[in-house]
Amino acid sequence: MRRLFPLPAPPVPAADGTAAAPAVTGADDREWTLDELADAYAYPAADDPARAGRSGWLRANMVSSLDGAAHHEGRSQPLSSDADMRIFGVLRAVADVVVVGAETVRQEGYRPARVREAFAARRAAAGQTTAPAIAVVTAGLGLDFGLPLFTEAPAPTVVLTGAGAPADRVAKARAAGVEVLFAGEGLGVDPARVAGVLAERGHTRLLTEGGPMLLGQFAAAGALDEMCLTLAPVVTVGEAPRIMKGPAVEVPERFTLASVLEEAGFLFTRYRRP
Image (tube, rainbow, N blue to C red; front, side):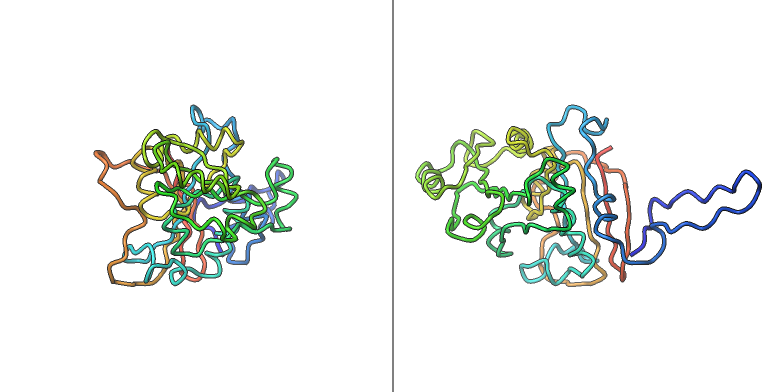
């Protein structure tokens, strides 16, 4: 893996005029350690000006083919790679909570995030649970609460919905021991309120893995702070959606390029809200 952007500053010659020794930098094509990746994808600190006025930081992680497909035959795995999965794991390991839509949970067969010893000290130092929680966004609560996602999670999985969600299904979820949080007054969530509701539970480092409809809702509401997009060197054709789906925004919102990594033709880009 190598860093394409930003490139490190060139070495500064010593005071006596001798050339500085070449340093090992992210621009070298080599295998990065998990700690190096975690540092590269660290969340902004609470006092970072980029977080001013925001209760948390919502980062998205998605993959796309060269022709813009968000998945192939309903699953993202055919677009992925070993490096993509390594970054996927690191993004989860530095997050407090993973926010995901109910349809993606069903299609991808979601399971709880794993406890990873490699990140135990880092998470403990940050005051995080041993693994990130999963927060499932759903309007109808049409979920199987007997699945391992809800029964075997090291950090309890929560459900995010609206106050107008079916009362019987809310009661069923709570009877199964699942915490249901309301982030909106209607049937579904208000995407602009998700970060605030999760921040009340101490979750400020937020990661969403979609799907496209949920990500489109976050973007349209101005709630998306960062986009981690893997561009896979494959073409799928077909009818797969783009990484975001929903009505067009009135004015396209511009993000700033923060970093680009590359391995085996895959580009791992990171864009942030200005």
